[in-house]
Length: 126
Image 1 (cartoon, one colour):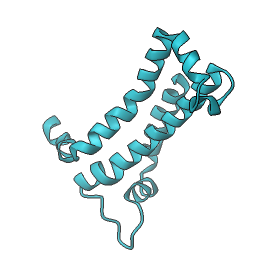
Image 2: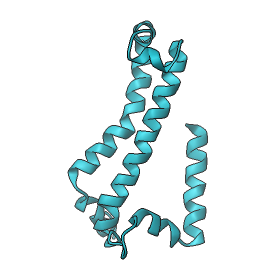
Image 3: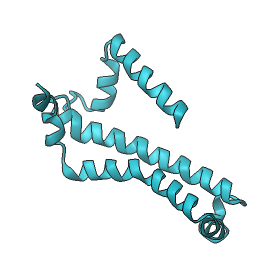
């Protein structure tokens, strides 16, 4: 049963999986760098091009993290739209449009509850 459930993941293009993996790991790499080398980050954040993000290293970090979160969100959408949903047979939407939007619109209330029940605590912990 489990191998069959994982079949769509094996059909997702490797490039999308690598994109998603990189986008999910990027903030953690940034956090680790800042934790290990705070003086270096402070010095780098005072120079161009990072200096335009703020006058202090914490402002620069805040904006970098927000940008990485946007990259993560876009990567998840791309992974679903062009990888996972087509692998599950739900990628083609008649009349154009997004398969992700169609999947969200047609989701059962129990799936919304489960999804929000996982999303909200995850973001609160983040």
